Length: 146
Image 1 (tube, rainbow, N blue to C red):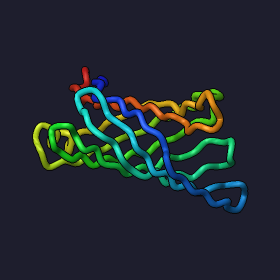
Image 2 (image 1 turned 90 degrees about the vertical axis):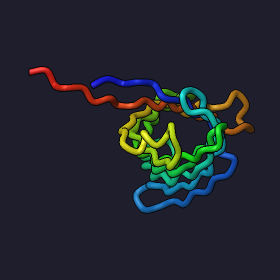
Image 3 (image 1 turned 120 degrees about the vertical axis):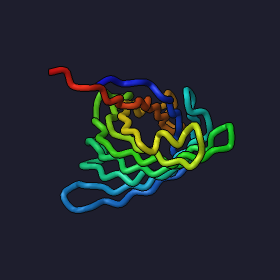
């Protein structure tokens, strides 16, 4: 197997909500807005509904989003993963990504498993929102050598 870079998402959460749960857990809802660049180019909008162990702990992203490509297609995105509570100011994200589209050349992504890595970047000014950056790569199947 090998990885082939597809695109990078840069986004912020202009709106968010949270509730505290038993045992220190939290449930969040974040609305995301941003852009994709790479072999997929367009606007990115979605919702993340992650659980978080504590306000300073790890979280489990549960993302549903849409990419409106600059050439007029729509790509639905499902991202699941794990967000680490470190390092401070650039928390790590790892996960898996699936896509759905009804237009070429993106239709091929319907049959592709992707993986992602990213960062939650703390703003320089605490009054500003965090910036998130996620790289999405195709996990390419290759024959297993005997």
